[in-house]
Image (cartoon, rainbow, N blue to C red; front, side):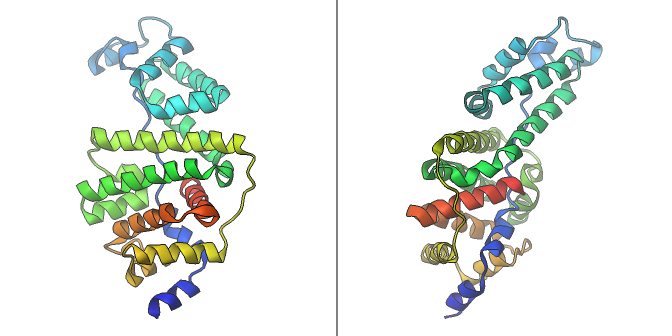
Length: 264
């Protein structure tokens, strides 16, 4: 009975408080080393690269990195991709490798926030793909880090991971790629945005309970208790519940969660 009473007094915005602390953060690609003729020592020993770089050079180097996020941006938003290339090229021509990383990160972040309002009209399949990527990353962090570090990840994103490995960076790349694919699909969908209703939130709470969610975990989520030691497993169950909820209610919940994550 306590579960029912807790669920009924929980308003939808409280669900989003903790969900929104998991940011979509993409590590900027280190696209320039070969352009500067090799290693870090060589880069520091010259003021400019050996030749003037062009946007075609930068594009070729980015594509060589095989990062899916940039592939998705280029495919879904070619004009924005070209503008990003011009910014990165300008930084590279100045011979500043750190600025190249900063510019690439900022360009992706700007696009991510610009297109966030499209998410409520993303088709369910794309929303599911993007939320699944978030769940996979959270499971990755839970499997490899302490509960305290995982909670810190929920607060601060990838910067909380002191020594990210290749698998972690691959998960970040997938998060970004699925998100931009969802943006592109939303732009083309023609669907009408619908906010989740109280009934939608009640349905996802029911699924959360069925897959093992507890009243304590619900309390932690609904009160945005970031010090709760089991917050990461609770959030993973919540994402799973949203993915298991089918039909219109599931679509409403997934798109709302994604928008809250991105706009945080």
